[in-house]
Length: 236
Image (tube, rainbow, N blue to C red; front, side, top):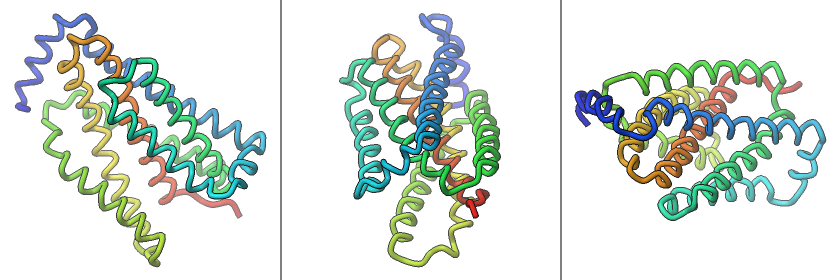
């Protein structure tokens, strides 16, 4: 993608049935609705005490991540075939599953820490999303670096289950923050690519919006988690 491609996008925008601005805004609305769903499920789970019953179920700490991964894989693999309603349903299913997981964080971290990290995450996320939307720099060149960083984070997470790597945790948290800040800008800019690729297919355009919202949702959640690990104070 060349820098002048963005000027071409702006010229083509007038021919689309929905402007790139409104399409991007709609995508972020879906992302925010997903976050609100997660927040609501987490608060209800903690306030009602349901979190204790859920995690008392054997292997639930394993079942939930597997279920989350399955939803993402299905949505990714079948995004071209799913109906718009099914895509939205899978997105909110993932948000609810994450809410169940997040309800446990109220038991581990103090409320002040959770609020502080939430505010910081929102500020950093908004800044990088704005950069990704307005910059004329082609961020697709960052993809190999971001994917490589993501693979490193996954491998480190798996190794930490079997090896004492706690001394490196704070450094890895900062690295994770940097990676997902990069993903935030990249995924925001990618919304434009999806818009111009699918604007002649309204149904696919809607599905692409949901998938982009999921990508941004995951960026926000992971950014929050790494900041929480770095800054959060556990309950005494």
